[in-house]
Length: 278
Image 1 (cartoon, rainbow, N blue to C red):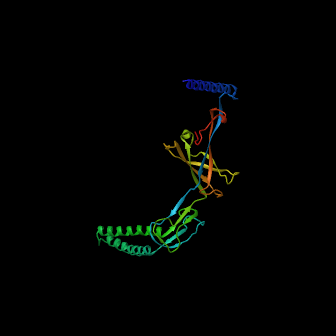
Image 2 (image 1 turned 135 degrees about the horizontal axis):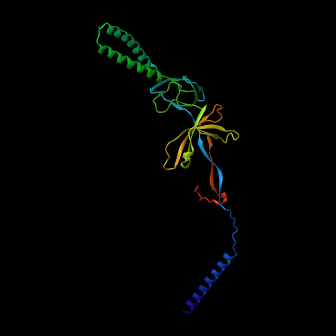
Image 3 (image 1 turned 90 degrees about the horizontal axis):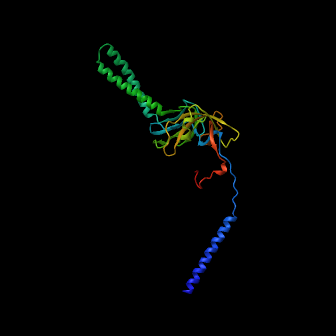
C-alpha cells in the first residue's frame, strides 16, 4: 500500500510540473500580427486561359472507294491549293462507268426522238431516263473518289500510304491542315457567361514569341454549361498569315471583361489547401 501511495503522489507531482511548464511556455510566446481593414476597390476583371492551337480546317483524305492507290501527288509538308489533285485511285471502275454513260447518252437521244414522234410510251422513256440519271450520279461519285482534290488551301500534315499500296479505308491516305488561319477552344468559368459575347476581340500569347501578340476573335460562344466543370466553351478564330504559330502549339489568352468593384484582401492572407486549388 505504501508503494502504491508513493507512486500516485509521484505521478500527481509530475503532472503538476508538466502543466506549469506549459503555462509558462504559452505566456512567453508572443505572436506578431498585422491587420488591415478590408475595402471595396475597382479592379480589372481579366481571366488568363490556356489552350492548344488547331488548324482552322483539318481534313482526312479518305476516298469512299477502296482499292489500289495508283498515285499520290504530294508529300508531307507540301503546300496545296484548292482544287489540286492529291490522290489518284485505280481507274478501272471509273472507265467502265464512263463507257456506260456514253452509251446511255446515245440511247437517251434516241428515245427522246421516239417519244416526240409517239413511237414509244412515256413509261419506256422514263425507265431509260432513270437509268441514265443513275449512271450519271455513279460517274460523278467515281470521279470525285478516283481523283481526290484538295477542298481548301493548306499543307499536307501526314501521309500513311505509298503509290501502289492497297487502300482499305482503315486510316486516311493523307491529312490536309489549314495553317494560315487557326482555331482554339477555351473553357471559361460559368460566372462570366453573361460577360462574353461573340465578336469580342482577344489576344493570344505564345512563350515561343514572348514579344509578340496574336489578335483573335471569339467566333462561337457555346450555349450550354458543362455540369461537371461548370465551364462553357469559346471558339477562337486566329488569323495566322505570318505562320509563326502552328497547330499543336500551347498558347494562352487573356479575356478582358472590364472593371468591377470587389472586396480586396492581401494575397498573403489567402491560404490554399495543399494539393488543391481551393
